[in-house]
Picture 1 (tube, rainbow, N blue to C red):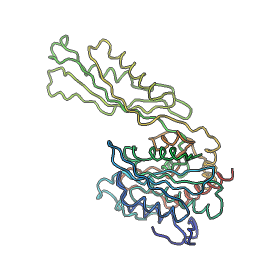
Picture 2 (picture 1 turned 120 degrees about the vertical axis):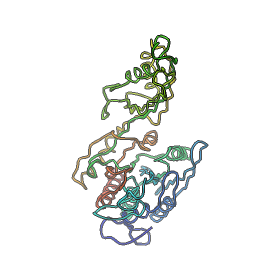
Picture 3 (picture 1 turned 60 degrees about the horizontal axis):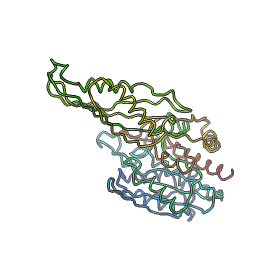
Picture 4 (picture 1 turned 90 degrees about the horizontal axis):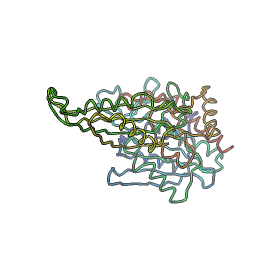
Length: 399
């Protein structure tokens, strides 16, 4: 990790030096930690955490159905209240290297931006976490505990990451009072959006079986294509009217397959895949029951039967701790002059696991380039984010 002086936005370590969050973010980006690889990224986080007084635990979890993953839990202090910063060092693949303006793991600086895979999602936020904690620690402003929950499995299956760390904490009798996840939630400018909840996600595989026959004799067959189209149409459009801070729940078909090479044959089978992002009007169980009822009605009279496979990758939730959300919003407004929107839009995050343990919100950098070629974030935003995280801590421990 590169350690150097800076008059603003830097944090003193125990040896009297200062850690620049941009330099630290660059060091992390230079580690190509594409899920499930780590390539030393967690080592850098652990070293930095130890420098500012954290006790650290490296946690490696394995599962027969998923690659083994390294995680890091670190805690400063022993008492409550206990505030947690959560995030991930793993990144998505860079794609074609030659398509990048600057090499994706070089961590180049140019045009006022830090460029590279993970710059926005979310290695710069992890650097800001640590810089902020160090700064507030040096002010003797922590009258409880601060922890870091850093996984290497957020961009992947999310099996051996955050939720297993949370299970480990529960087994130890260790609780968290509030958590801030550093996902890149800002939409156009830093601080314009906080994610205060997340939609649930359900993936479905629909297989419809009819009876094969000649197209000239439709009475002698049951066309599964007609049936599956009717069944998908029965689920199209909004399936509710929305929920507080949530849009209506929608189905999106992602694949339709028949595989019939003949133009004069009614096929015997057709399949489709679809996803539903749903709001708190539904639980996975109630949503599955609704889907099956709609499909039963649509399939009636078609002569076809169906099988439905369902996988729910997260429940919908809404954080209702208004004081905690206001603390984050006040810190954003003080540093940027912006009043953030409370949103539940977009994809999901590991907050879907943390919400079962404590109130949680997501806030971080602008996410316009995440998972894209030429991912980048503004240098000034990294320093401003560090300021905001430090102000959140100051306000939290004054409460």
